Length: 219
Image (cartoon, rainbow, N blue to C red; front, side, top):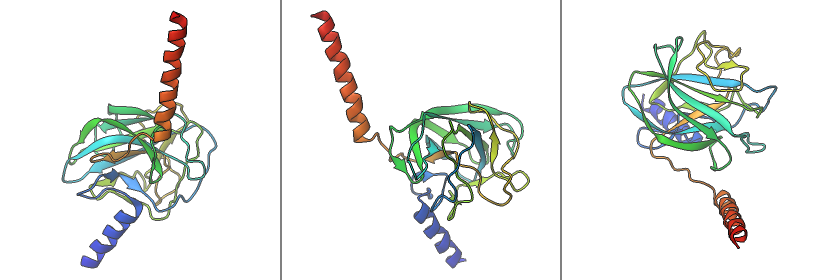
């Protein structure tokens, strides 16, 4: 049993997911198994919180390791109305993930107002690929020990070819017993990500240019 705990702890540390004492992603992997796109998809993953409440502080979207880019991907977090997330969901948080924030693991995250994920409750996070690459069957895939993924027919991925995030109440990964399509993610605990200096500099230049234009107009 002790050996099993040591292996799990090492896996958690290696892929950068959260532990009971640290902030991190709800799921991560060592390397991306695939990098592919063929359309714009709404990918969704459902999960159930364990014995203790968690605090969601960020919503993220997969950043392809070949380019590191995301293209204003909308992400939405829902509270499910039943245990398997097969009915409807109530929207509790949303964000647009772009390149403002640095890559954390294989995802970029946007800070949201803290949301309590209640013990024993099921949730779903959905996000639109906007034509970006997605991945699946990723080596070293692991989830935070405080949650469990909800599978329907051994499939954890849910998807639909639409351009807006929506609550998906079916499993359609087509890849039994493998991790789902990524896609969206949730960050829990105190966030450690911050806007990149380059992004802040560009924002500063834009603001300076706007102020300069206004001064010229006044003169």
